[in-house]
Image (cartoon, rainbow, N blue to C red; front, side, top):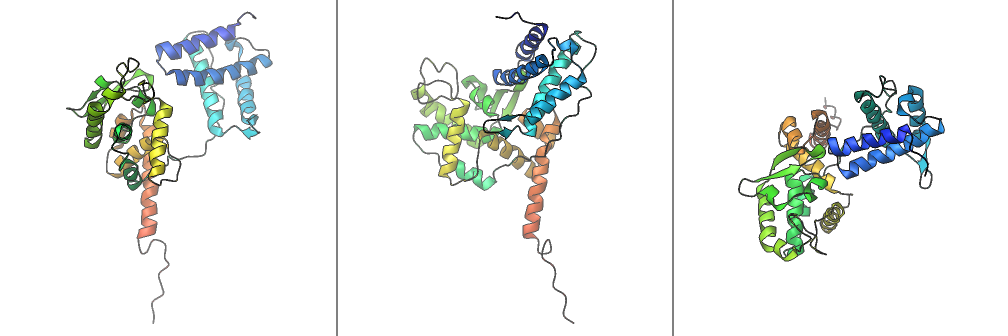
Length: 316
């Protein structure tokens, strides 16, 4: 095995920093690792084996390489993938700068590729109601209703939902304690429907699913009583969306989008929605205000008698 060079050691220190000090999830750290391993390979092809020797032209060359790369059957990487790769590289070099390993940031002058604006695609209130209408009265249906009502009623990320323990839920107060990104905790209200669905699940279903594998997990799978997974939640949602006749593609994040959009359409303040979603910056939340504006415009154009129709000339 070849000896580890300076770049290897620097990258490992950075990944350890993300995992241990910043408390990022294994999934997020793995994404950084993939981006940075590809970056390291690009640097070594240019004869660079130390992050302190990287210049802005080296970073720009890597971004250009990623932009021109393909995967699978010749599919080009999307602009979002290129931007994410540059973000990972930028975070790495800023880490070296903060740690006093270097005095310059070679990513500072590299232009971030322009992204096409992609707005979230929320479900309508009626579509959500159809999905939640009747998942069934058997054990699976009662559990599924609790899962879906909690997702939509609290706007949780799917990773937050599957990470819930029984003690995180306070049905009397009507709230749930959530461990969000970066290990940050927040309390999120639970509406009446979600509280009733969880209460029914806890008394009528969870005891029958529980095994030694369950430990304190709130939502359990039916196979071995272990903690429900992200894939399991996605399958539950897609099953009930199909049963409700929803033809568009839906995911747990679709319900999170819908939660935020419906709150704003109902008059909620954007900063309140920011806190409920656990966004670090209100700028992230403001994308939902664009969705509601587009919805208002669509309703106006299809509903107002003088919005699109050309008025007939008056007879003389």
